[in-house]
Length: 308
Image 1 (tube, rainbow, N blue to C red):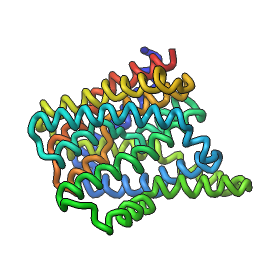
Image 2: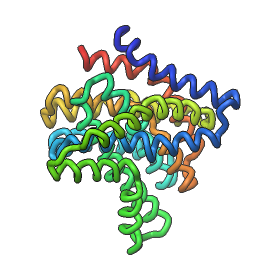
Image 3: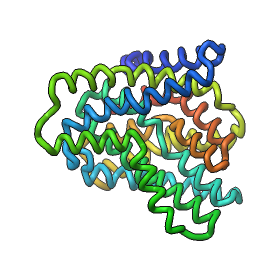
Image 4: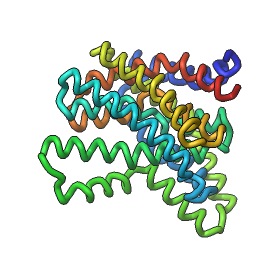
């Protein structure tokens, strides 16, 4: 446990540096926004392209791993949805809480941390989680909120969903990498060196941006935010573990990566979606802050069990 904690400590130390820079005003919100844009559109995209250019689609979309993550995540999604409806929250708020309970910070934290700590073998499974979160659950959120507010699925909705996916740099970079891999040509030395160099900026840049962005999150609605953080950090990895090991019989290493990915704190883009739809903004913001702080202890614990 101590050895794993010391391995993860530099990641959270950089998040802490970012938080301190943002809290003191040395790194203002405008700087955080531009750093996030650089990481999202350039550094992280280069990293994802480099990973996927060395894989095939079948490497990422492993059926048993996909089924396990979908089943475990869906179970917690329905649980969080049910808890919100029992509290008599409107459907749009219930769906946003359910989304918060299962969407981890896989892009900015999971990809760099898990691949570095667990090795390149983990990359395909981490990318699978990214694909499922973006394509399945983010689309589901949009569909349900649209239906709840407009009373029907409009003809423009499929086009909006497709454009959203195409314009997402994580999806585009993975698709481009897989397309290049399919040619069988391999990356030339200059291209490989460029993606490696640019991708190397993703880890420190993303971690610093996470910390700086946390200064915008307020610890309000603590009861609900605490429940959502518990669902994300404890129930989600437990559900994915049960599905992976006992239902689908996933390879132990891939199962460990799925469990670690499920144990990540709530993603920052959930707050962006909450703001976009003007739904449960305060409780989502608080859940991101609380889950990120608590994950300093819970994530090393889970990683140590996987490594053991």
